[in-house]
Length: 331
Image 1 (cartoon, rainbow, N blue to C red):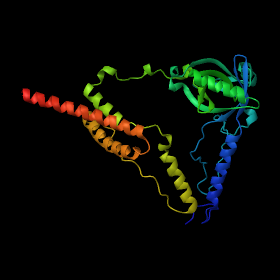
Image 2: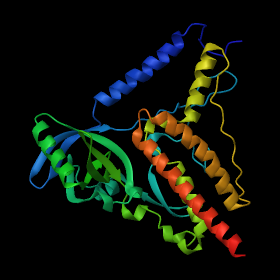
Image 3: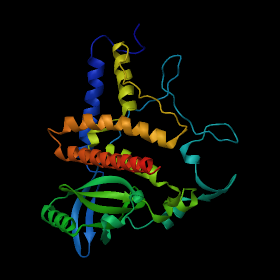
């Protein structure tokens, strides 16, 4: 039996869905979300800001189960239980449970900063000095009309210096801290979190470094080395999204979805740490040998990494056996 809706046995609905998504992506990438100038010192470079990431997960609407009609949302007053129009709404800050300070349009205007169309670079800092936790969302900067030469000059200067520009700019009424860095041939603007937005790790209960045993550390290090590989982002896919899209496309065709197999569930309990490390090491060694054989033709560096890890494991194993033999002869 077919699912509810105008779907037929042909692939026409599916084709329309994917064409709409592709057109949406092309449109999204072609048009900048912000135009202005990248400013440092007395230099102003016309630029456009383009999004550098996209949300690829499917989005869903809530439907009435009886007739598959979309659900609308209303703004309902908790006290009166009736709907409230936009003109009757104000914004309030809840400073304690049930108590609010109401802010008017004039209050927001008084607090607002000057709406400049500039990305003002304040400093150039060493890239390694910035904690990864500060980075939030990346955007591409492209040169505006007449800005190609200055854009290219700044890009190469940043690349040569090994530093990152720290800037402030206003996007959608909100001031952002940002980093300006070079990725391949593009200047990339990444919004940064302000210092007070990060949670201090000192507030957490974390084990001290001195509590780790040397034997466990050696084996855990061997396990890390055995899983060493080259960074390949295409290797890591969103299996959940892939399964969702397979279900959606199958239901549009009136078929059953062929889903990605789930990995073997892992036991959260650690009964014997050393035994678990040995088991993991044995399993990863088999995968490492398979990866080494497959990558020897096209990725010699990865193969050398695996080979070095195997050599280190063999050396430590031989040394351990030698020490055991010496103790037995001494006894």
